[in-house]
Length: 358
Image 1 (cartoon, rainbow, N blue to C red):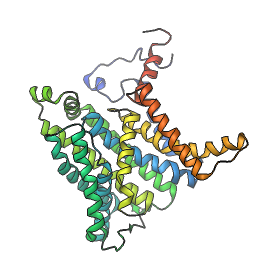
Image 2 (cartoon, rainbow, N blue to C red; image 1 turned 30 degrees about the vertical axis):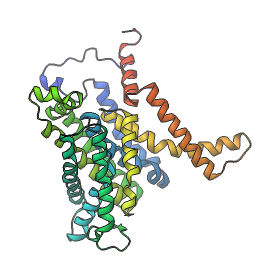
Image 3 (tube, helix red, strand yellow; image 1 turned 120 degrees about the vertical axis):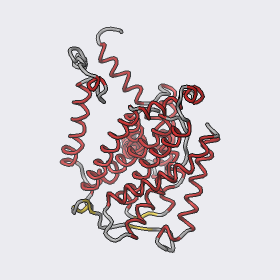
Image 4 (cartoon, helix red, strand yellow; image 1 turned 60 degrees about the vertical axis):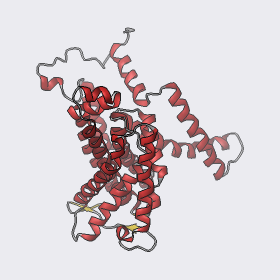
């Protein structure tokens, strides 16, 4: 009964175009953000920050970028790991080679490096689509692996290809504790998620969705496919590049090219598919599913084994995680192919009309 829009009248176009058309949604999001910033730091431990919260926040940002390209524009990409790597190494080189480079401008410049890299490998989207485009973007992954492993300039002439950063600061405040790292990553996520939400609601977002639904019809009504596709690659690569820089700087602190392998590209694609294509909220649901579920299973399976009176080895737990995890992915895709965001949308719609059937 509390989730109704009765009495919430729109008296201007500005009010009708706001992000949250129902007041309850706005209040819920504000409460959720306030809880993430204020309540979570009161109870979370260092392990909870480093194992769950920080990876969840950064992967949510990366999945958001992938969702713009795959979900909203319909361009299948398997090069997300490469875009993360370009963002990480780009920001690293700006930090190393420019004395006194602040962290936030370095992240933005790293994201811009990923933008140009994404546009370069997005050019095949003007000619090919579907699986052919997926293979073309997969070339970006192999090229980045070779580039950062063989060209020593990108790794500051490191013999092993491994690089590291330390003494991170933002506005004079040190980003060294787990709590400060979490709050910084969460702030970046909130800002970029708000910008992405406004982009997909605007004219450029409608162009992306028109290209996704039928690119020939979109070109007939005056939408330029080249501009729409390359802009989607640019925006997506920027967000993914910033996420890659955060993953390297904040989460890993020391990394090598293998940290951004093709596995991370597939994980990001799974996040978008499971969470919901073409949904900002689906990016968060998919990231939570991929990041949190394996940790939950690693804790639950030994407890269940002890409950039934037998022990399970670490290797057995690992194999069982993969089996259950893969089975749940298949089950979710069969039950709701539009992702967890669709289930969330159906639940909200049911609340709006309850107790009536329509």
